[in-house]
Image 1 (spheres, rainbow, N blue to C red):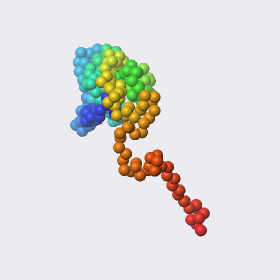
Image 2 (image 1 turned 30 degrees about the vertical axis):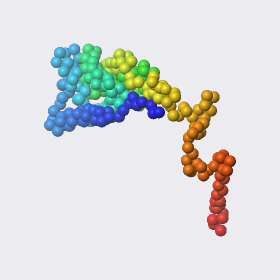
Image 3 (image 1 turned 90 degrees about the vertical axis):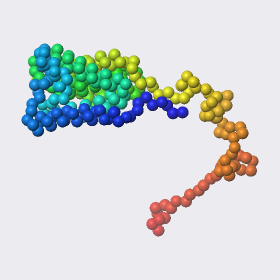
Image 4 (image 1 turned 180 degrees about the vertical axis):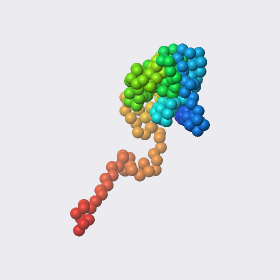
Length: 257
């Protein structure tokens, strides 16, 4: 009577996040190795040419610190997305990246907005609000984990530092919230035990046969054969024998004598 498993680990759960992280590191390595600077390919708000940054900006980072700060949360959150929300994971990721970049293009300051932080805010926001909207205990627990790990990111959706694209963070946060509400009904079914299924028949359940009409547990069903090892434990009257075993243990004082 095992419950169904709504969450199944597959190679894609860890494989896709690894590929995403490797790609952004490969782009950064290419810039350093061959002396390129791809910052001009970031989102340039309200400029037609700046729209290309919607696709390119998540893969471009200004320095190693910027890249490292985005690597771990991007890997952890994207892995959680593919594990808990596999049926809609690609929709959330692809459309989320496009919309986050587009809103950044609309509200952003005149600068090149680069980095995967907007995607991180998208994923964190979606995972948190989706778990709350689902009212399913496992997903709610995931929401609390996200808050515990990355709740401090909320401070950076406002202009606290000049060099940080808070517009991209805010866009990702709002898009994640919108997607969580849009897909709030699309979650994995909670695990069901055999007795919760529509075709469950109590008479066919071997475990339930060990209870009488009053709910009392019956150890041995009528007509059930007694095994040889159980037979050895019975006394002459057919009742269970109680065997007492005594063990003698030397004290530390005795062992030292």
